[in-house]
Length: 366
Image 1 (cartoon, rainbow, N blue to C red):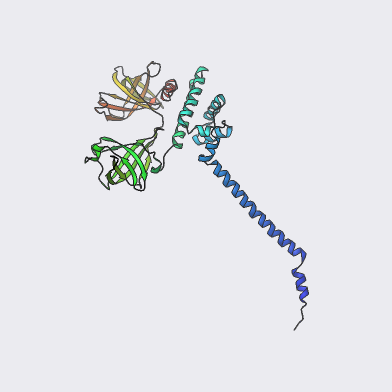
Image 2: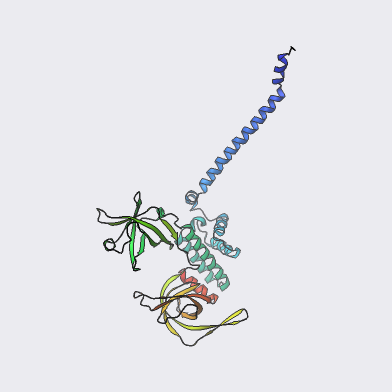
């Protein structure tokens, strides 16, 4: 049998160069792992600090910076010109953190009301004023989206709900609480005692509008009815309910009650251009609401949808103006409205100065 010198093997295993290389590799790997863990912890802290519940609350009173304007402009999908208007507004009035302010409807309204006053006093032309109002519209919609409720459990206690019975008669209900029983709703004694309430185990729909102006429909199922010791009449609905936000109109509306006049219009196409021939005879109506995109008024004439009208009315300073619109829907009025028919109008021809005047009225800037 050959004879091996074990000391030679030991010498090979203890070769200084081999051990140093191995230790260096291990050290590098450990440093990389430790660095990755450290970076992960730092990023986690940054993400936690940037969460709206934390970051906004901590930074809400800091002055608006360029990055805040950039973030809001991106969220609202502002055009380059609209973003410049927003930057000018913040430069003029140095508001607190815009990313926080945009969630406060009354504060953001006040900020833009001040800017509107500045634009008017400086004689801003109609085109630039329209850009201002388009920016306001987009930021108003952003405010709505940031305040949207996505879960029935987030509906505030005391929220008024509307239920329409089989006869389409409205009943006002109140969200009392949400607990392990389900959604506990206080209902009027008259509804509790009648056969117009939704039957046990039946599905039913309630609608409501929040303080921010967002509208919702809540689809639920009746679990049971109770009369509590406190004297409340209770409907307990399933906690497994579906909350749906109503689709908002493209333009903000404002209610009003003013007389209006309208007359028929004949559209005349000339190539790609459409001209409108307005009839001389005028009829009386009563305006219900208005936006930069349309209006709603009642009258005594059953005019079908699809027809064009010239509508004349006054707001603000009382000077009447005219717009041409298209009837998208005609509905019958109710005794409560005191109206025979209600016409829902979409504007198709409106002067830019009139559009700006309506926008200022809708946002209550005057």
